[in-house]
Length: 419
Image (cartoon, rainbow, N blue to C red; front, side, top):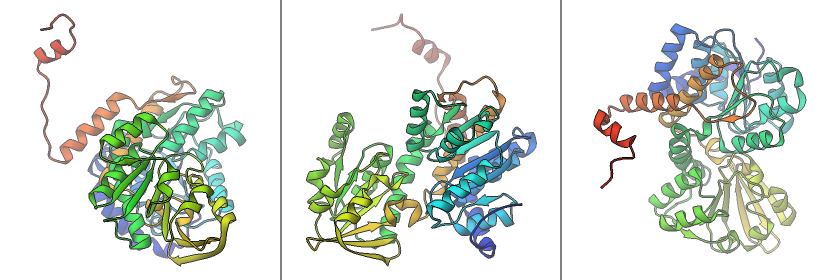
């Protein structure tokens, strides 16, 4: 079995982390047990480009239990948990190509290894695997039944591919499922982003002006958590509807140019490029902390920051680089602008990833069952998958809800009854 991980001696610690996460992923565990009996993915070769975390490990175990031949590679150079990657190789016999801190060349070598698996199904977090296949591996286009996309940035890229007419196989936008973005993006990103910033800096959030770029589900989640910890939350937006929503949620809303001069902690969560640029850096106060929790590190204009810096000190703390500008002010950039919640912390808690990865697993089964029936476009997750996952999650939480009576169902489906 070919693989590339940091050190197999780390596997013992990794296995404990995988098992600990599994304790808080009851829905996925039930699906894994069902998959092991039915083998709905038998004969499928799968390549997954995901964050290699303990939670991802339990998804990989589930896919393998379903009969799939699974290979994993990292979807971000800093998001791999090396001990987990080692355990997947040693204890679960799942090939992994991922090392935390790998450079750009190695990152794409690992994606090439996942492509070399010649998959029937792919799974992405950011669409790097799919875009590589689309651009460089035409021989695989007809072979692939479908792909699942896990994050907002990836869905944006894939919809652009569909619009440009270059998409060659069906995509399921798992990120857009209610069982994913309403919980994973909001509560998972919200909590883990705060966690990553605090672990990297040990900063007190209370009383700080925390500037949040983007008020999508991830931005909302982070804003909610920062506000709850006593921060003065400032939101910057380009979407007028989201800006109004932020204002009515009690956040201060302004342009990044205005916010740059008063912010203490900045975090981008937009999926776009150069959200914080050189103009903004020049306006920041001494000691400003800048982080990103969007998928790619392009949200912060790091080349622009380097250009205006008079001095750069790398790694003054783990995941903290100090940039001294020509005006003498210092900017502290976290994790080289990469996902702070996965670089400096452990990513989303297992209990919220339980729903996301349960949705991933069942959507994979849906792709296999519907092979040849889906067009080369981006699809929503089927409602029956959403209903099954949410129902199982409620049951695992010991929560019961009401059911519509026949009379209520009839009323909701009729237009004849009014006042």
